[in-house]
Length: 520
Image (tube, rainbow, N blue to C red; front, top):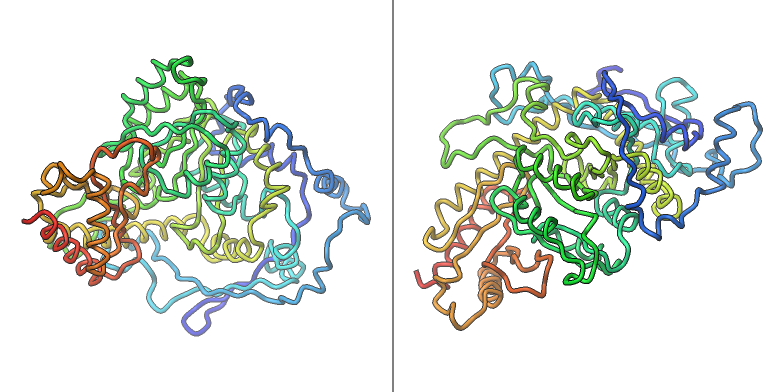
């Protein structure tokens, strides 16, 4: 690596040999002291569709080359890398400050190194020349359904460090982001007509992804801390197959950190209770957690401090994170969905799934005839950034900086809400993670609450906001059960990608809308 015009350059990666999918699945990266227990038998959760999927014979043939590199292959129908027209992919990435810069525990918008970036590039020959382990000859070629092994190695090490899975036969597989991951996992687990448990509000595409499977959805009420464990227990404990005309659910989908749309984060004690219920009633938990690293310090209204408190070390950062459901999992019943969309960029369309080998093997079968693998260019760019420009420690430094950036954005919106929204008819909980604030409005205080339904009040407010040049999402758009009446009037606001002055103006306009509607 050499300095160059305020940046540094490092060379890149080329092709890697095809690898044996069986050995790839059976050798996950593990923590320093690997757990000795294995996952319990959970194959009965696999859907009929998934059971019908068979291993690709063509991809299986690559295992012969892994076992004996001297074999001359006339088998694979691969195009020649020499004829790929893309000769080089280069990128310049920001460089986070080292953790030593946080020794005072204060962030003042200085989490990135000023006037210093890192450049890296991928060519078709960089592996052959000894400059990188993953080059364009490999990245632009057909890949195994697991995704790039070199990038996957980094993700396994990261997962082992952060979540410390408690059983030995866990593994990871790459996805095309969490929307693809959840659709794949749903098809692997759910048969038509089965019940599925979710939070009462969910990202609409989640419900849309489930709809073709024709499940029956049960939305568990949420409070300021997310899904209510007491209500979950009541439903599972008192399940009546005759009255419900179906068996007790065996799949639960949840977004436990910075939930979309409510912004709620489930605390450690409640997570342990939910996991214990899943183990008792044999549930598979689909932990969709793209906002996990966007956990923030407590909100202080109208704080006058000129800095954001941050963890002084990466170990302190890890210790401050609420335990994931995966980290609590001793049975192998949690399938964790991670994504680069919220921490790097959604356009990469890359993520990864972590879980017991019995499930990861089935996801691999799905990938082989569906996604196949994420974009090779995306994987090459991510590999260069994560493994060659940053490394594990620098990636955590980036996440600490990201946490601070979103804390500032959250606080700007919450301050604006404190100043502009009428307290007589509005309430909200400051989110501890994620990108959203969930605003509840009083239905009973609305002048026409006896004439209009909650849904009609919400729609009227939505249209009035649009007329005032503010777009804010109605809560009913996120309801899992459309058939039942709303229990209140809700709106979701996001602070993630909006300029601070626009946030203040938008909230002020929405406050005026509410005052007019409620005749305050």
